[in-house]
Image (cartoon, rainbow, N blue to C red):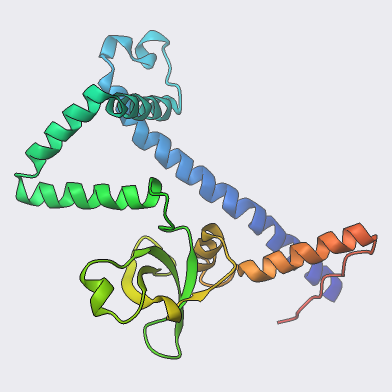
Length: 229
């Protein structure tokens, strides 16, 4: 009877580990397609797929949205597009609230997506929120300006995200000597934060290396140890 309960429990956990990520991924994709399908409103009613074909094509709005983004990027990348963008930004600089929101969001996206430095490309451990308590953070930039000469030593700005929502967090200025480097990729660190510490990159990597070494040596893998609880 104990063996049956153990097998049922193991198979149930395995099924949940397979189905829940698939469900969440499908839910996100479905929500994304519903949101991007609104872009079909840009097409004249007579030329919309449901009127031409008699039925809807799921995901067509996502393709249209990506196409619009690519076309806008291509237009802005040339000389004429850059001139138009510069003119529009000069106009936005005269509008107080919109100016702040536009240029702040633009600088943030440039820091994440386009800079060749280590913005959001390095995970570190810092003593935060107090001595003896450590948090996972992401280096965003080297501190410059007043921070460069008012904070002792070379320092960096570090974004410390919250769990399980890493899109919010705290910005701290940390001297380089007090940043503890870790051998994690940014993706691994984000997974660890989102899972509230359940997914530990170091352990997963060590298990993978151990399994690979056992496979090369021809040794059978270690049996899974069942922990009752």
